[in-house]
Length: 79
Image 1 (cartoon, rainbow, N blue to C red):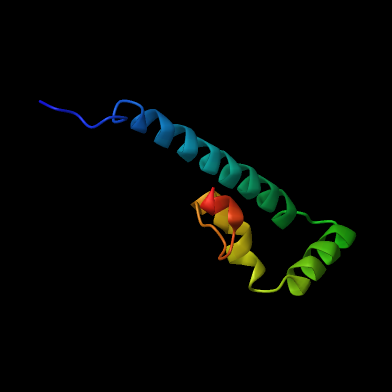
Image 2: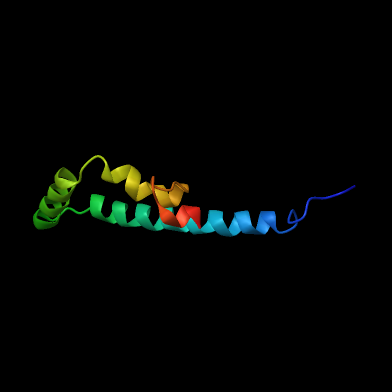
């Protein structure tokens, strides 16, 4: 049976890429959880203010790297 060149290394490359995205998502989730569970009045006031000031467009931009999304016009994607 013939195999395509590079097929042996493809799963390892995918796994490295997947792990880096997963690690990023886990770290962000952890930080978000810590901020969400703050109970002290000053901490909750800062958290709420930051949420109000964050534009909706920032969410996809922030999640893009962990989901493998490249922003339009990103020169790094052209490599």
